Image 1 (tube, rainbow over the protein chains, first blue to last red):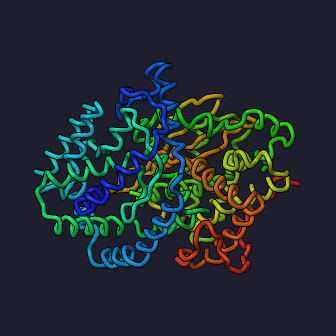
Image 2 (cartoon, rainbow over the protein chains, first blue to last red):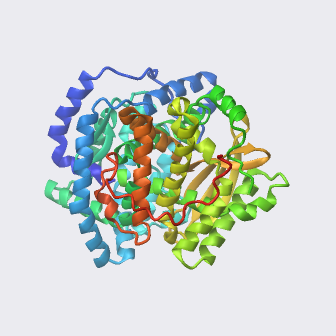
Image 3 (spheres, chains in turn red, purple):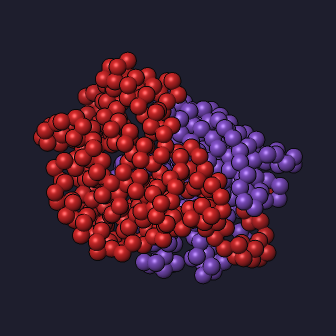
Length: 297
Length: 243
């Protein structure tokens, strides 16, 4: 994704921040080092009870990330919101008016294709070798038959994109997320994932030997182009939320939980707390207010 | 990245709206116990049919709401969303919360009914969860776009399967609202939370007809100060035995 490209310019400042935070913040998770990463499509939870327990503790480290930096995060979030409202969205509207959809999706595909080095390295580091193969196949096919990545013939061959980033790699190997962080422009992250972003930013840019000004322009183009595809969605999400900041944070945390624990792992991790948060309370309710829900039609 | 996630969330919400539409015809089916998948598929079909058949947006919303109202267990959803706060709520507060939460879903998701007409919604698989729950995995398919995975968490009550959570691309609606409600209760207490919810709804109802994009200016957490001129046109009719 484009944010990683932005990092070229930010790197020195960010590294400083990250190192400070990283050192200052005691590790919150109790994930065992050397936890085996799980494959994208496989159930992490099926690796035995021991692993399952470990997954749960990892899940806690993952999903119950506190928000000790909330004042800062909230300020950044609202800054981003304003930037979006006054800069990004108007630009994206203009862009959407100007550029026909096929060209926009071509641009989207092109940038997606450029993520290849990041995904190659990270799927391999996570031991997701099948995904490594898929990612490589996609890049080769889309770069050639797909005219430099503008088209996505691989998707038609049932080879959809595979997400992978270095924050995820760290998470799968047991690194706790650390506090939630919102960066200007880049948006939601965590201490761990910010570090991951730096590594990915390096991977993503150094591979293609491009100058910083070009990178920045290119990242801006990518951002505007992506935003143009989401014009109504952001408004809708905002309107649908009672507290937009918390809604965005929770969505991000759920997404990361899935990235790191796998679909099955994330599912198992949230199961009890989410759907049976208080069994006794449930029972009480059943007694005292029988089937209010099942109103007779 | 953030934006992409939020739009997924949006998708969940849309699905929820859709589910609402399916209610009435379902009532007929309740006598014979159905599988969760069959229930889900029938409901989705009803919703799509309602969306296609209705011409005005008001009719679409009304019809979908009927269907969803019958198929969603809003009481359980409210309880799961309120979580810890539910314990300290009085019966009256619980009732208010359920009503307002439901209204919130219907307003915010109803706003998007226009966008969802060309899709097909297909049940892909059903899986068993702990303690008798089921998850029905569905896909929303649109030509030329990657399909969106929507999971419906279902629980049986009185032999009927009802939806208790909608999980869009692995983002759970219940989890998302639980986080927000917990934040609001922590900051303002239960009454403050209910008040925020009610005001948001009142504001939402006024802008619904023209689909203004104005609510942008309202800061999410700090409840809009919009006058309570809510045109209560389409409040779900059934008060559902909440005597």
